[in-house]
Image 1 (tube, rainbow, N blue to C red):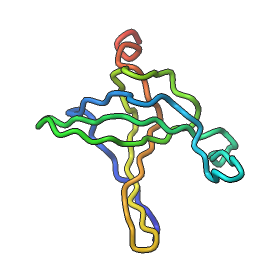
Image 2: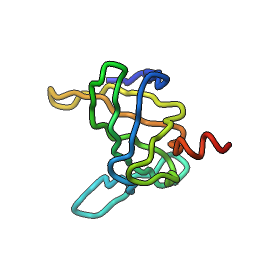
Image 3: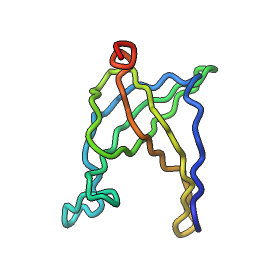
Image 4: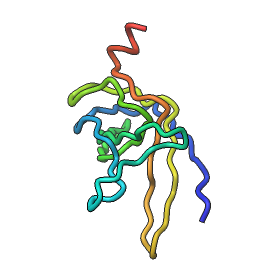
Length: 109
């Protein structure tokens, strides 16, 4: 199944970092770390996402390179895309962003 990227409108979402950036591990037995097509390490950040109705979800967002955010930061997810996946009858949505910036850094820029 080929996954088509789905743009996510983050304008009405409050995104907060709840688990800091960590390299994404592909194989826990070997410790193999995921890299992008250019050989850069892919990081994974766990965030809480709250919509305008107060519903909250925990989501992992993948990003190339270590983003300059830490636990508790309000986050701007630049270029956030969702990818639907299916494996052995299970499915979900994987998220990837071009950048994850602290809201305070975004305001300073």
